[in-house]
Length: 374
Image (tube, rainbow, N blue to C red; front, side):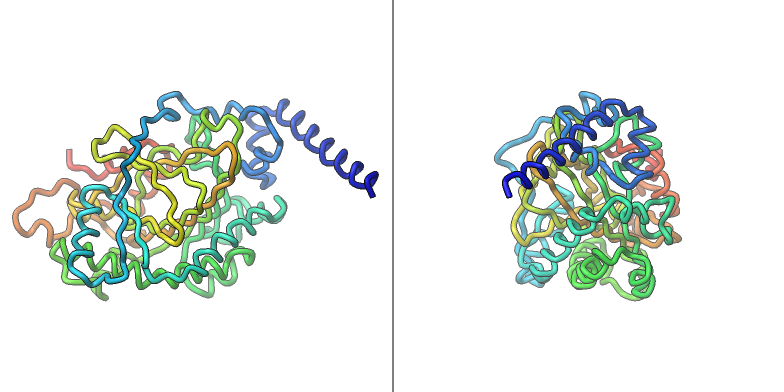
């Protein structure tokens, strides 16, 4: 038996040596083919056992250094009595000052959250030849995409992240096109979050002089949804790169489920420092997106955030992006401007805004400039 195990160990070591030799000889085009064309993702790069990361992932110094404020955190709000006026005020205050807050006792069952995290791991544990079926080049649907980094064609340095992005159109389309390894769990998470999403939006829009979310405005605030299953593998030289670069979301709201690894940082209200968002078991992280910042005429803040790479532990996160429909025009709500407030943003087609976001690398809060009135 000892000889058998020794032989297996030798096989594994030989495979790792081969991967290291291959990595050392990789050109940028070879790396791109390995990561995306062959479906290995950055997970495959991580599993090579490298001592240092490929140069394509090394970020400029200003992107990988940050001053973290210790002892400060984003608000944590207990939703067990969500109809209470103090709770609703806390939600709106957090949206105005921080743009981010965590919620507990939110009504989404714990087993649903655990199941979708497990399903995320299950998808990424599939062989590359299975995952590659869902890349942009191979996916049977434009609404299903497995990828790596953010926008590799536009980025000067790659991000240390793989993702599976699932745009929800209908139950039937999801059942026929989403990967079976994670489909049911992702759908269940989206469905069980629906009541929470409406509750949060109703609270937020009420402060904008909108009575409630109903059939006349629901599409504008939450007419489309996308769920991402993000995977951040262990990273050597993790201080030289980032898992996700500085950006703000283009959504109305983002509902984020993170595991217990940590690494999410948000920009402090002083606009200089960064604050770590510590994982809380069973909690969800809520953040305001650019669309709601525009519709609220700047009252609610879509805040810059980023994710650090980790040198010792894999991280997964599952955000639900709640958006207007691509065909909707977003701009300051008439109810917000009715008192004579001057519009800070122009009306823009939401699909144009999203295209602008994805055609460039992550660049902090620059996307919102696209909608600003000069």
